[in-house]
Picture 1 (cartoon, helix red, strand yellow):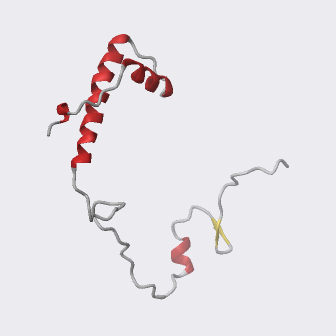
Picture 2 (tube, one colour; picture 1 turned 30 degrees about the vertical axis):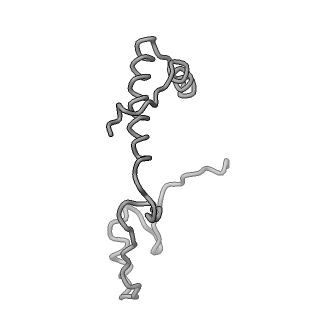
Picture 3 (cartoon, one colour; picture 1 turned 90 degrees about the vertical axis):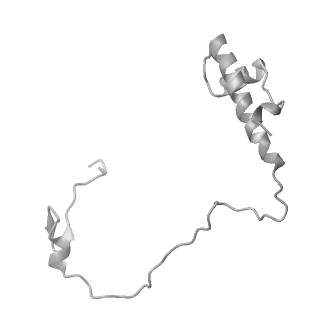
Length: 105
């Protein structure tokens, strides 16, 4: 069945209400254009009701998703010199950064 075969259509008042809720100012020509386009979208979505979904479990994704995790194995720690090598400023094995918040003093 084609989307055009469904009688789902929005009225001019429906489109104007949607435009108001979306804070859009539409001309009369735009209201007519959106009335046609939104009605076609709703009719197309209505076609999904024809599908036989009995026995199909609901899913969040079309393809099964799972995390791929590596084993959490402790390795050799990095040397402090390697950690601080790319730091623009450091002091006593700590990064020195510019203050972000001023406490008003």
